[in-house]
Length: 80
Image (cartoon, rainbow, N blue to C red; front, top):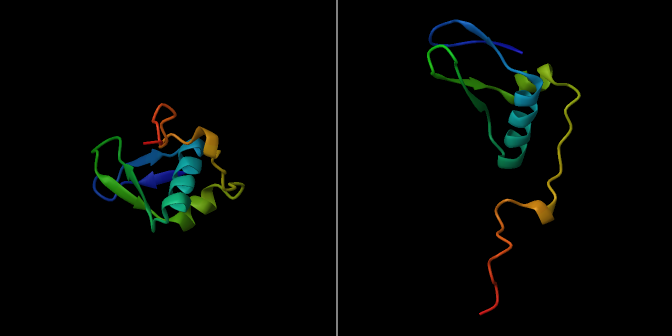
């Protein structure tokens, strides 16, 4: 997917892995857009979910396994 920076107007590429990760993040956090930093000027560019879906029509929602949830610490004792 080619993006043109809104600030410096230089084009840059988003790989399929980045697009899939962006769609997963938008879906899980219920975001209205995804922020991508321009590699040339480092400014943030907003990319809509519609544009990301157009670039990755074969994307499917990835299910997270509750056993491998990074937010839970297995060493934490919940009993008092």
